[in-house]
Amino acid sequence: MSTKFGRLVPLVFSKRGFSTSTSVQKGGGGSEEGLKSLNLCSAINQALHIALDSDPRSYVFGEDVSFGGVFRCTTGLADQFGKKRVFNTPLCEQGIVGFGIGLAAMGNRAIAEIQFADYIFPAFDQIVNEAAKFRYRSGNQFNCGGLTVRAPYGAVGHGGHYHSQSPEAFFCHVPGIKVVIPRSPRQAKGLLLSCIRDPNPVVFFEPKWLYRLAVEEVPEDDYMLPLSEAEVIRQGSDVTLVGWGAQLAIMEQACLDAEKEGISCELIDLKTLIPWDKETVESSVNKTGRLLVSHEAPITGGFGAEISASIVERCFSRLEAPVARICGLDTPFPLVFEPFYMPTKNKILDAIKSTVKY
Amino acid sequence: MMPRTFSSELLTFFRDMALMRRMKIAADSLYKAKLIRGFCHLYDGQEAVAVGMEAASQKWTPSSPPTATTAPSSAAAARSPRSSPSSWAAGMGARRGRESGFYGGHGIVGAQVPLRCGLAFAQKYSKDESVTFAMYGDGAANQGQLFEEALNIAALWDLPAILL
Image 1 (tube, one colour):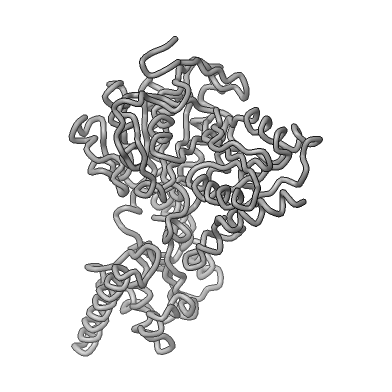
Image 2 (cartoon, one colour):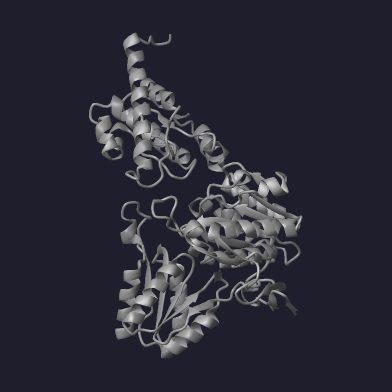
């Protein structure tokens, strides 16, 4: 099946009970015509405009979204689509997600915004015990697959304990939901549209550090990028680096510095953390013999540990060195000590060197 | 019979509120100059709540303030001989807060109110005849953990707690 946007492929998730039947576009997304330079915030905004415009049963709601949200990602939505489809909620995360589950269960597309990922924990029970199990416990008689929970996550340079956390690993332990994190404006738009239209509930974490910083050419068309399909951003032969979200930019800088020292790095953006693309990572590690995973969340129990364990299981005989994890420290997210906490370019570069020299 | 309030006390209340307002303005300027990092939640217009609470309470009443935490701590500092507003401004207020029953600010809206149930229970259990103040705003009032959980448990166990 093909369109002017490229080839469409059906994604079939047979593992972990994920349902099938979403057609999504493969590749970079969108035609090369009609490109516009957008930052990540504007790309999200454009995706939400398209989602609301293309499906009259879609709704956007959350704290302060009606006037544009604290990051301005929902600017103009209420004006264009009306306050019956884009509306503010009380400051009550459990209620926001619970409401979204009910709305989605009636066949609607519920796009819920949690103002910061740090605030998602009051809604944890609703996501884990209601949204994730809705289809399974009913034997597929009903579901809340139309639910997408958007939340800005990660460091921002000054956020401190309650505005900087990366809670993705908590949700990766939950069969029945998907967890998606984009690295750039183009990815953000295509992945968010895929998440909204996916027949499963999705938690979509947006790297808030990149809202204004990340700018690239984004197709203005309606396009979707495949979920559960990692992307090899940079080809290499000595070591495989795996990451997601804002961390990819840091890792890419480390790759460039490593290249100056004669080390060839392969860089992979996971994009979808659950269910994640083991095959792409496995194939790369079989080629390079080394793996480094990096994320902002604390190292203990972070999703990097799951990647590490899975790849050791699959590639044990091919590994030339232990899997390296360069992650946040096992402390609450600090304020003035943020530069020491973060998995920086230099930390990654040191780990690349020691892994290659092992 | 209501206790009398003297003009000297009223002047002290006004001085405390004015001092807090000046500190808010200073904190705002420092934040905008990027000399204060993180998030700066100010308390403009709510000074009377903290000052009234302090005026009505005895020395060892624990308080559990809302997200905007600078004013209650500076109010406590202004009333406490061991801690001055200048030491609070230097970052000492929160550290010394526990001495005067101040249990710090909380970044998650509404989360401080259930915590104060534990403080209040400890007070009741030890029979020290004090009460806990838990401060929250209109945003926190929407959180389920406040009314349905914290207030319910406070009423059920008859805890010495005041929500304001």
